[in-house]
Length: 244
Ligand code: NAP
Image (tube, rainbow, N blue to C red; front, side, top):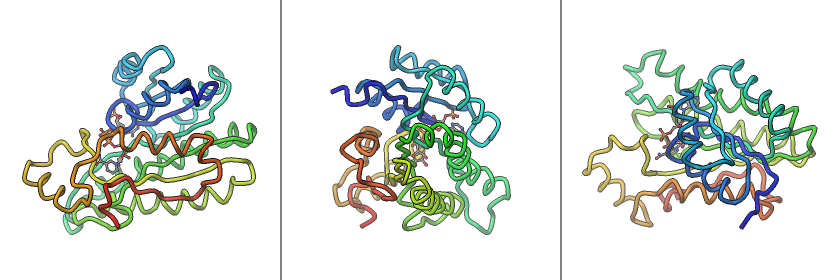
């Protein structure tokens, strides 16, 4: 299936985990894919693992100038940007009473402000094209909270409001903005969970397993596809039923 033939996709944080799975799926289905992460070598070797239709670039999404430059390069080299997946994310957990300012700032800067920077830098291109599919990666933590993650929950809940507001702003230009909210997904981000924590988590998940990056990527690809042309401002949990 080459449903993304002729489309250009940017996936932030595409060097591993959920972002890498999205990049591979888009590339497999015909898109030209650009992935970025903070480290150039990591981004380029991940792109090489996907193949010729994927390129890797260094871009820290917390830096508005770096994001602007990345989008400028995409406009110059690819000539368009159809799909933007705001996936770059970090956690820096801690109880609120002991949370340092930097822990709060870094998590908000990456998970929330990063999407603002990329959407703003991509706006001119998408508005002129009268086409855009933006998929923001939130979390069920943004829907239901999680002790020890006030910074992350605030960023991901903020991303929901951001997605809905921007969806309204750009709907007349055939640009959709949706949010996918994963639950527990097996990636580096969750790799420090002990076996006991995993067993306890699975017990709470109606579908009784931890999710895979591919579980999330397939929903992201659906939202970027023609089949989802009439969906905007939606929040779709991919969590095995955990948040219901
Ligand atoms: P991951 O394996 O840790 O990958 C995170 C990716 O983001 C990496 O490619 C990382 O690359 C990149 N990144 C981090 N900070 C960045 C920055 N400032 N600028 C550019 N790239 C940056 O995480 P994941 O589990 O795949 O998570 C992907 C997204 O899903 C995140 O938004 C996360 O919050 C969300 N999510 C994950 C889960 C889960 O259970 N795994 C659940 C809910 C939501 P570098 O380190 O090289 O920069």
